[in-house]
Image 1 (cartoon, rainbow, N blue to C red):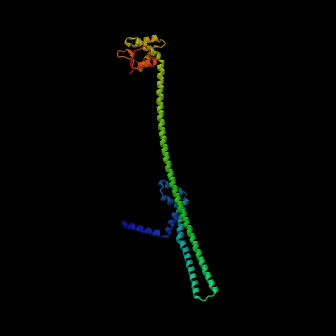
Image 2: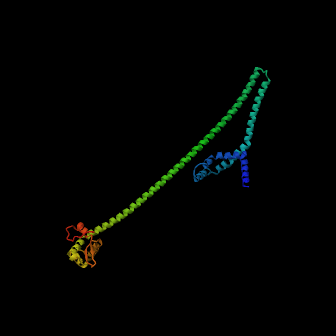
Length: 306
């Protein structure tokens, strides 16, 4: 059943295509819309094809003429007018051939013609042949012109397809370059962000170190007073109250609050420390402060820095 339906459709299509009016209309439509044919069989992406087709037929009058008016007029001309013209041309050829044949026949029948009659007869024959040859030559020229136009259209088609390929290649190169530029820009932004973060961290560390160095320099007289007090104590251990009293005796310019603040500051740095019995003695970092800040000739016990 399905095979019969397919065969029926195939026969119908063959009959339709065999119709001279439909065939001529289709051929005219294809020739008029040759750019559409190129786009349909080209390697251009579908979205680009759709954009170009919309651009070609954006004008409604162009669509109306290229797909309806001109193809139908050409089909009507080819179906109804051209056969009459072709018939007239063929009739003219047959008439011309018949005249030539009649002339030759009459010449053969009249064997005894005068020289003047024979010359006139041959002149008529030559004239008929000349007109016939001129007609053939004109027809041949028209055929050659049409062939030349077809060749030019094919060359334009090839050039147009090459241009499309070149534009697509340039478009792909530009997209690739844009992608690389965006990647490089992203890497540069990440590097700048990391550098900025590192700069902020270093600046904060520098500010903190500067602040502590300034504070340490301001508290340096207090450190000397505290270390002198510890040196005077038994076993280099003294209570906080006794150290503060010695501190006040050696550096009376500092208030009790400032003295306690300095004592806490040096405890925090590890230069002095509190023992389990509550007494204060030298810390592990005191040896470094003694050598680098107070000087190696300071009267203090030799404590090894860890």
